[in-house]
Length: 54
Image (cartoon, rainbow, N blue to C red; front, side, top):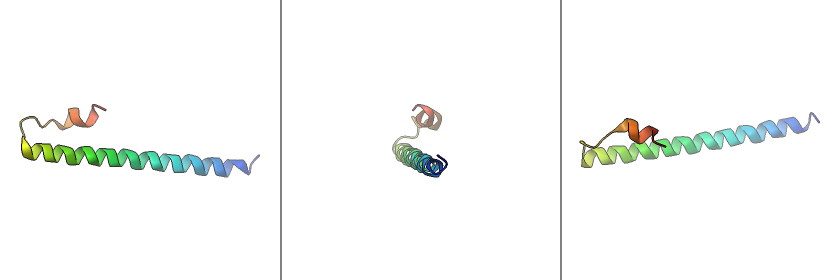
């Protein structure tokens, strides 16, 4: 039984890292979209709603 735990923790850790990387990629993708949108029209630039809507 104890030999199974390291593999479970490793899988959990890998899953956490993958989820964190996906979150970071989505966040930076939204940031780049916001900066592009701001350069085109700064009047409709709303970082809070764009960041936290999803």
